[in-house]
Length: 149
Image (tube, rainbow, N blue to C red; front, side, top):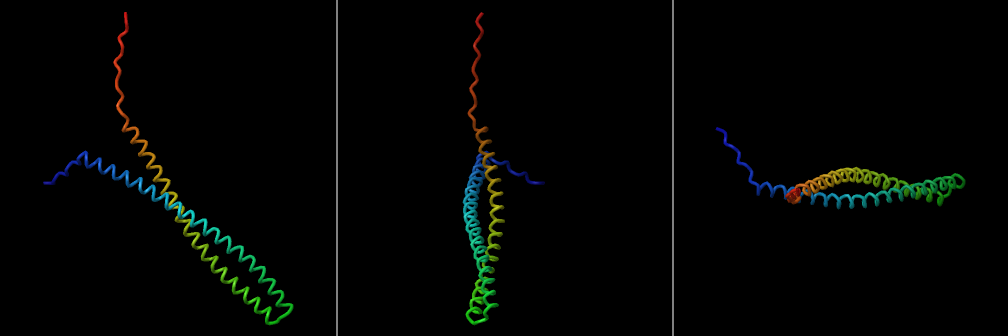
């Protein structure tokens, strides 16, 4: 014979509902915090990429100028200047690639966090609305006045 499952008590069920609601509210707060932090990190990385791009364009121009000078006058100073610019340009390109990769990862995570945060906010809003409807006090029925003859 199969053993029958016990029926859940009202107090236990109420406790579960309250714990779930608390958990959802806490998750909503955590999501908001995470979105705020990731947004700040994304802004920082965006500025870093922009800075590296600007530096790269400047160094590219400087490299062209140094190469032209070297063609006109091939002395040690011009060779050294071109080598220094080339070295700095290579380092900048490496830093730019790294920053772009980090930015892509952060933006992907930020998108996922924003989606989850929207879902949590919607669930919380729906539960709050349902609680408001369910916890309305019962309206008192008025007795009708008898019509006078």
